[in-house]
Length: 387
Image 1 (cartoon, rainbow, N blue to C red):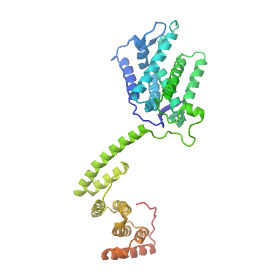
Image 2 (cartoon, rainbow, N blue to C red; image 1 turned 60 degrees about the vertical axis):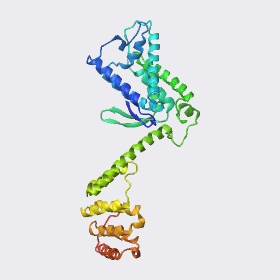
Image 3 (cartoon, one colour; image 1 turned 180 degrees about the vertical axis):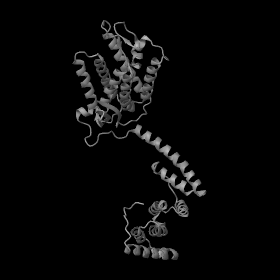
Image 4 (cartoon, rainbow, N blue to C red; image 1 turned 90 degrees about the vertical axis):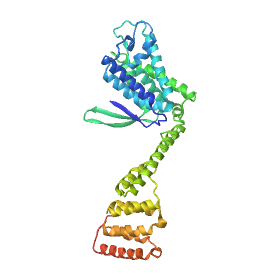
């Protein structure tokens, strides 16, 4: 059993309609189950009882049980991400409803003279299979992330190309259709896909969707790239990236002011934590040389030598022309506090003693002598260039 839960297909639009449809289906199901919404005939697409356009729409939003509902919503989420991610919310919603309504209309027409035991059908399956068909046309090589399970103790995850995933389910539905005793749902699923695929081709040919050459037609013609699988960024992705960059800039601006406040009030620990936290946001805070020195000196006052060492190393890298006094001080910390004589000697190798003030030059000599003494005494250090 394969349960899809995500995709690596590029999402250029937020899945607003997909989420909205999932909420609408859940609300309708729960509302009918607890009596909040009335149980009306139009929730079912009736067979052999004429044509009822309202049923073509409403039957898409009702399900026969919790398993039916959850299964459909999982598939809607994954393939909605792919298709709405290329279309935007209102075009996707229009396509989704068009597939579902069209399939229901044909289904009711075909079953006009039906006199069997099955009252009718309900559920979003046909529309979802149609969306799956659209995803096959527009992103056949992108992966669907799936959970698989054979038994409770034998399970895992696997990535399956969309074209392979859809072929698997289409094949299963075809097999079920040919087997005796089929409930009839298989041909509903396949008919939904049969509507979705040509709809996707029409939109592709009309250039209403940009697949950047990674669609099914290019795949069939062998014109897709062989060295990569995912489309490059488009202007939509660039717009999303620009919005994220703007948010990062605002966050960094506020963090910079908070950092300055912590320094002014002598709260070195809070300033350091904020600085570390912001590293992953837009490249992190950009500290001036004076800010580095203020923070480093505050950490030394608090005797937080291990915390100050990586910050001093970063300051040396950022401001190499003014780094020699910091190299000497960091070398002293390596000898006195961190027991890293080799690292101390490495730091001092890059120091230009002729440009140091006398007191720093004397300190550098003492630190170097102490470091060599520690090495002679057998002090062992594991120098992996980290702090």
